[in-house]
Length: 517
Ligand code: XUL
Image 1 (cartoon, rainbow, N blue to C red):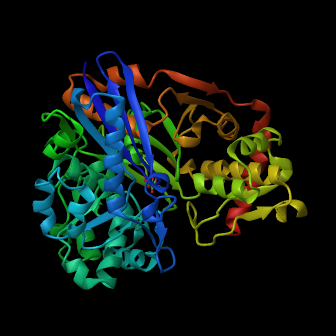
Image 2 (image 1 turned 90 degrees about the vertical axis):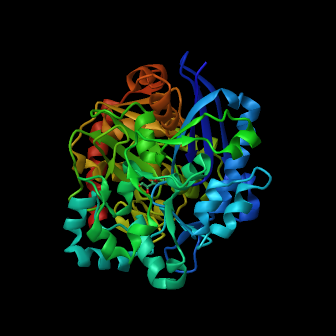
Image 3 (image 1 turned 90 degrees about the horizontal axis):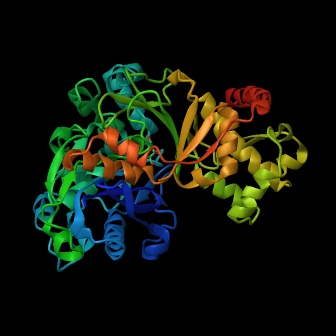
């Protein structure tokens, strides 16, 4: 028996998967929803809005409490002593700010007190800005100007200066809270923060997640001195090292051995970002496969044989944890937009799905840019979806049309904003929470006119963590793991060819609406 554990620290929940690589089985799977399990943090969806426009924060202590609940629950589902290796991933771009005492505290965690109690005094900033934060437009302009423009940043870091990325967020903190910035001796990503806790040491950042900071030189896989300088003073000293995704950090901290029954020699592999991890967990880490992940954000990504970046500046290049790079496009209006339109009519998810089933492709020429929150692909600061169609549709009088137009709008916008990758997929791997919904999968198949495959294991972020840890430690190759865990197809959906022309027309309509934004 050789168990490997993968952890997914995402926006609304923390999840775990345990796999047995000796016989290719899924041993256990569980998840803690922040809003439901930890209501005292008053963050029903895992985040809160800050006072200033565009600010979105999470509480790092909530993540620690969730980690404890997760491992407690997992220990009732399987014997954690059998776990020999672990890794995982975090929502990308979010940052945790820590004082000098962090270094000592993380190495000496006592199982007599909770993680949150011990880490609380280490925080130099009580909140962590997360990827949904769009408050740093000015900082992005300042950083871009300082290094010679957005095209220079994009060429060096894989993305133009981007509001939610960690560098601009750090600059905003430095400008608004100078004393707290000076008092900060370590800035971690969500991934490296959770990894540090599990390994009981100050862990590095991997190139996959590091590329989402506007601070890393993509070509050297190391910090870019000019970008650091343009962002904030003395920043190099406050950041951990950058390492490749194939790096072992060390054994698990004694805290987890004493409290949850892990074996002391359980090996921790560096964590990565949720999207790079999902690339591995969908079996897409070698070029040629495309994945769409439906979560709080919807993302479209693919491993690339060479660096391909978006000329419009909305898309990104991240490190591929298995080597080379991946291209990614992220849409902020993912599951919460679907939820907004559902809630608007007091529907449950079954009624939402029925509405999709009972309405025609093309939605009788009613179109929506479903931007219920500020969007990042394309950049749009409003909070009101843009509609085009009949009067009843404009007046939100027809639930079926509104629901279909929302979902069609999401994936028409996705198709338009991913053309820069230059890929015409024959198959798309669909993963994440909403991927099991056949109607959504059908709309994606029809809009992209390709087959949509769902894998047996839908939690591809956590699975990617477990697979990476296994490759590092359990004498099994990625190829073998992909055969075991990523080739078992769940339900496959084929494109309805007759809908191609309907969606061609819809794409033109949406393009016109986007031009008018
Ligand atoms: C990617 C992005 C989101 C987060 C949260 O750039 O911002 O997908 O990783 O999932």
